[in-house]
Length: 195
Image (cartoon, rainbow, N blue to C red; front, side):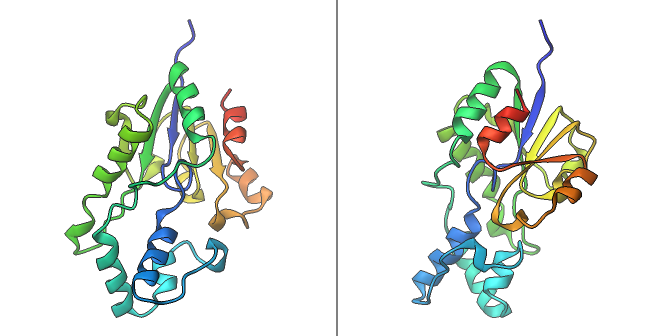
């Protein structure tokens, strides 16, 4: 019998769409301002700062954001549930996810609970103990890691997959090759790499 491999997956941008875009449009709609049509309208990864460059307006957005669980009703990215189910039947699957903590604000401390709740509802085959809250992902060990951020793919893991999202489309093949990273445009690519 072969040893089980260990696969690590980011949640936001790999399993579920980035909820910041949804939250920004929800807030703009609530105050009667025009919403964004696409994530492609943003130039940086930090949507909140770009959408609300004024600190007072940005803080009002964060106040609004902290009141809601934006994982409620969030649909998984196509192929994620089936892919994770298949992998979990033969290997170890862990979800390694950053949880947003804003300096000096305790109202964001419930994000881990919200993510675990979403996993329990949508991925019941992944034990909640396999959901890891971590930002410095280079500390993780496993056979593969799939993330939408290049900075999270710099650890000592053999297979590194960059899951394509709006903010990483401009990363060149040369940059990926230099880091030993393979691009996964969708879950079919993920499953092909991890077979």
